[in-house]
Length: 72
Image 1 (cartoon, one colour):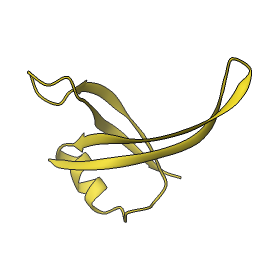
Image 2 (cartoon, one colour; image 1 turned 180 degrees about the vertical axis):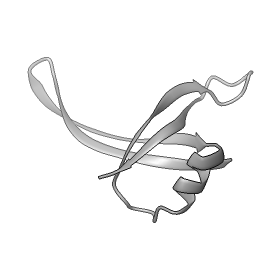
Image 3 (spheres, one colour; image 1 turned 90 degrees about the vertical axis):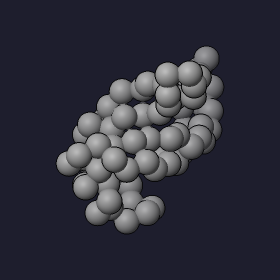
Image 4 (cartoon, helix red, strand yellow; image 1 turned 30 degrees about the horizontal axis):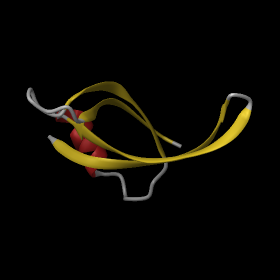
């Protein structure tokens, strides 16, 4: 298991106006995905897919569970 942070920066349209979006997201990868993540240098642009779940049973924090990685 590998736990890591994802930084996201983009420009989105909301109510017909541009909006700058910046956030940091906690993520986790298991098994082969963890091995793949470990081989990617910090700062590398990636596209990730997966699902959101609570960090733990009692937590309200969300974590992205990564099940697909594409280098951009």
